[in-house]
Image (tube, rainbow, N blue to C red; front, top):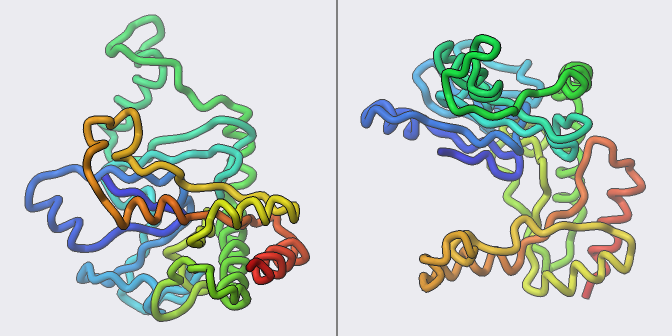
Length: 267
């Protein structure tokens, strides 16, 4: 299972080779990366962020294969929660797959386990995407690449203008740069600071809302209390320091300029 965390495509040709070698299925968590692109040449070599693949996937060199996250593995879970890059009006989601057999099973499971009305093949549930959510998503889908590109512009501006020495910025990838890298759609812009909680309070006092993705590492969760005695210093440090700044396709220039000004003044 691979997670395209914060909007960045997590993929490699080595992953695919390993799956084939051991006859494994690859499941994607694509909840945060709708519209992200993975580029590779015809030999399977990855070239995302190398300059061969433009942000609109329109500047590809001959022989370059382009695939979207959500279509890379055998199946993918997608979230359309309103705060996502492609958001519905309420809770919504979908599974994508290139397997007709799997698609049929998933449709049945989401429909009371039924492929024929009142006949249940599985112990299913009621998990259908309702028509209102689908209608909203259908309107927004054609704008997804445009919206994601705006997010890249905001992320790029953050990278170029946040100059507080205590702030650790997220990696912007190598090579071509943020605005022309289709492999990252910047669902979240996550910085780090040694005094994260004080920084968050300071930003709140200046009317800038932030969130922590995520406050507790998995081995400290009650659900995995059997791992509580393990020590992962780097993981624990990251969870103490991460803070998500506002980033959105509906942010106005004066809003992200304010974020930069306020955060640069933090001492």
